[in-house]
Image (tube, rainbow, N blue to C red; front, top):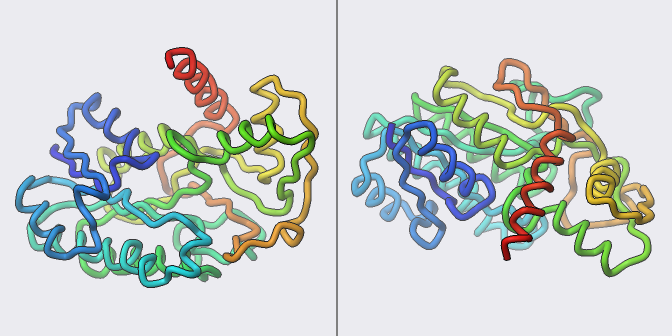
Length: 280
């Protein structure tokens, strides 16, 4: 299978570029500079030039707070971009996988969100991503939508941020009333590929199993790193941000590919980071 991957320089895109060839698939990785999915003509040209069997849309404007002030940019990338890809894929008989987020939910639920629970986003980012999902579902008959949460991998992420600020501060304050399932981008890429190879078209929730607060996540990062630092848990109200976040951001993997526990994945990621650091 020949797969065209958008957002190829992002955390998920980089892992897909590694794993797809290992599974015997040909890959065409396109970065934002190489393909702006919000440009319909450019999207059509890329599909014609590469003739893929599958498109995996990992392109997104993920600055959650930036989306509040850059609404037009957010909507063009997160909603119109997926629509452009879905329309182009449908006319060519190409499958599409669109990667989405737990931010499509309001976070008020008392249990992990199942794939077909009603979506009610509370931020511009969440609204744009939900619009992107719905447009893909309406414009294509060969779609898979994969929602994930708390993704970390190469590039800027929560793990690297915690380790950086720890070196600069004696005490850290991290939110203890927002819950997620931290997800290693490598594992997410494996889940996406499994959905393509083994699962039918549909809506999936793919995260590492288990859940925690951001505070618990930070404490586990420092435990694995062997760093002694005080981490105080605080409510989100003490750390106001432009965009609202869902208090319960945990996704149920009901009817979806299953990934290992987030603690096991985090340990592997941090070991990989250490090995990469030794090489540089």
